[in-house]
Length: 257
Image (cartoon, rainbow, N blue to C red; front, side, top):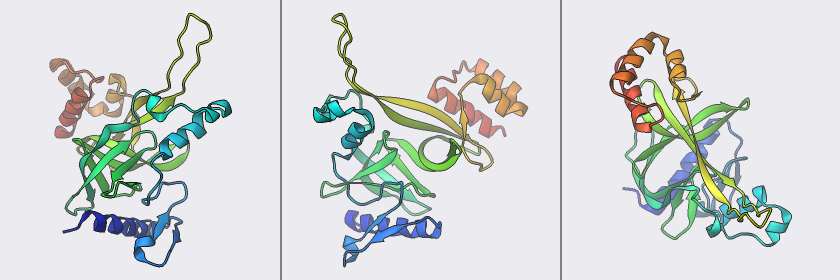
């Protein structure tokens, strides 16, 4: 049985091996012992330790002007949370068909990372690797390849329905910067995180395609089932704006395909 620290080391080595096999350019820095090894990938967060203030530092770099950087707002003053759930909870990590490993995890919606709270208090994060999955607070997350602005990338998706036609939800947090009042009748607006949600479908093992969640687009995507879907939605008084109802619709679709 793997211990937490043993698993962490095995995780790093395994992910390194998987990316080598995938012909991704990997840089490795060795410091004498296996425990000191650190693997990194260009453009991705590695599984080694990073500073606990990393997220707030990134926010200041991306969104705050030079004046605000000299007098930065506290991360705690930003309303909302970039994390789901807000705190680390017990969750399961899956790799291929191996038995799951239980870890303290949370999903960082701002940086699209699954973070792990190590026994020694360090925070590490998983690379987005095929054939992995995470179950956190009753929600299943998997990395998927998508095409965005003409470029292929991996993103973490919430699996709402895991049938032959998969229904996925991409949830990402964006930061709305603080805003100073422009006149005495207004109030300053605090910075806040806002979660955006986008649906995706996976058909015939193709890359996920964005789905608007509208009836007309659902019927267009499944023309041979359009009549049955219309009747089913009407009879059961379902709304495509409700995640639970949408999952039920895809249950029906997968059961009748």
